[in-house]
Image 1 (cartoon, one colour):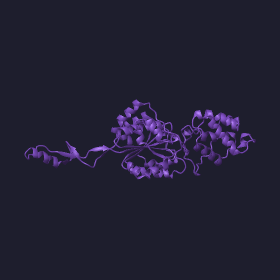
Image 2 (cartoon, helix red, strand yellow; image 1 turned 90 degrees about the vertical axis):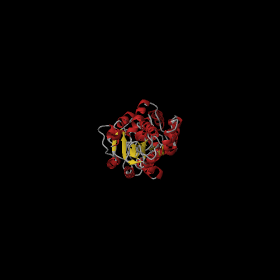
Image 3 (cartoon, helix red, strand yellow; image 1 turned 180 degrees about the vertical axis):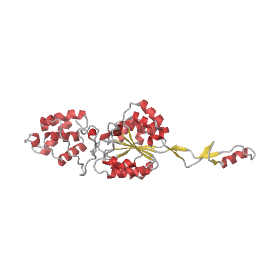
Image 4 (cartoon, helix red, strand yellow; image 1 turned 45 degrees about the vertical axis):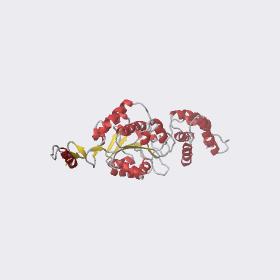
Length: 368
């Protein structure tokens, strides 16, 4: 490390890296323990070839925004030499995940540097969910359109009705007592209909940070306008957020509940964790299941494929909303999405509230 920095006077490489991380914190850059762990693991797995290579390894693991980069660059130049900053483009590290498997294929037009919210990752960061307060007019229209769009199911129990398929003998007999035994009017019973349960699973990983706020707003409309609705988020862990969406201060409640926002992507393990819980499993049985995710899974896709197929068997409809599908040129060519495409009832492009409202205007046809 010291040879790369051109500072042979430093006692050891470990002390040099430790001083670099300490200086980042002094410069105001938030570098929690999970980020430091990812940085050190990246150095061990992929030793840097030159200062430019080291710069991008550190930049990808220790920063998450443009503001972070502004604080990061001067500190890196001070510890490892300004030459690294003069390298305009450095070849990205190999697409090998920590388990030794190849990363899921991402179309070249969708590739971007780490931190821009378009790539999947494994980093387990500690970030809280954001919740926007704009688009209230669109949100109101979504609330109004949802009841008619949610599929309905016939109830098993019959209720009194003006018209029905079965005579209500008890009510007819009771009315006859009032009229001296004469049957003046027939009474009927029928099976009423009610909304199917709705289950919403929202990807809040780093690759979805541009869209997860809009999906959470849509989930708020679902919880407030549907009779039976449950919402979960997943990034590196599964979080039940229905109580937070029913709280008076939704923004604060979500920030407290969702701690893995804008972090790594573990779609398969998160969905399997949902299916492993009997209480959660009951929520998916016969429900309209909506998964909002780009489907960019990393590593072994077998858990992802197995979980999606199980959800498809349990649910009434399994609908997948992806922001990538808004692009007319999009094709589900990644290993995970290509494997589960046949299990999905709908793969639609939705990336904000207006596009979600457009889908709901189709009524129950939005899910077929």
